[in-house]
Length: 164
Ligand code: AR6
Image 1 (spheres, helix red, strand yellow):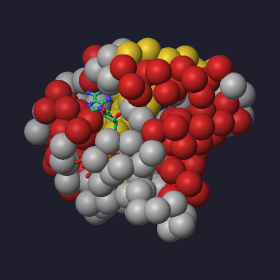
Image 2 (spheres, helix red, strand yellow):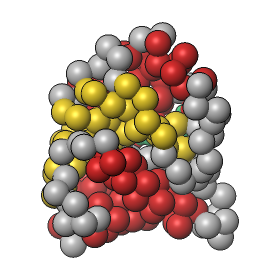
Image 3 (cartoon, rainbow, N blue to C red):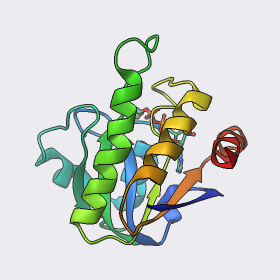
Image 4 (tube, rainbow, N blue to C red):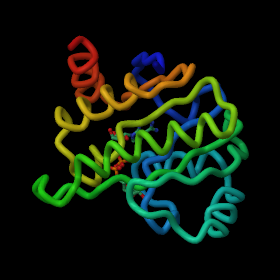
């Protein structure tokens, strides 16, 4: 079982083996945490991402961390929330699962996640937290996972989901 802890802060300052990026399917960079990661990692990240030729929703692909204090960045495009009947829960679960798989394949012991899909992609926070927490806790690998909540609302929602 993966170990899970929660902090509030900016994921670009996380020191460990890998961080996860809430990307888009083109892996072309964007706003939110994706923008922050690209700015902090530097322009080489964009060049590396272009070589990956995109990534389907729910899957995950890896680049080096470049200027970030991590070895790897795991890019996963989350589902865009419509009304919950377009496989959004299944796709969000697979974002977490595939990101954790990439971490293990790349010999990571410490990995940090932002709250995937709950910003620009509009996934309801309480529903997303439950999926994130259960998927990470169920994942069978000796990984130390840190959820990095950027704002208070996200921190509170994860805190609640982790208490159950
Ligand atoms: N550290 C940690 N979390 C952050 C940071 C940060 N530096 N900055 C924002 N967040 P979002 P999405 C939080 O919108 O909903 C991009 O344009 C934010 O408060 O970044 O999956 C991509 O290119 C929220 O809690 O990702 C895609 O097009 C969480 O990260 C699209 O947005 C996710 O919000 C993806 O949308």
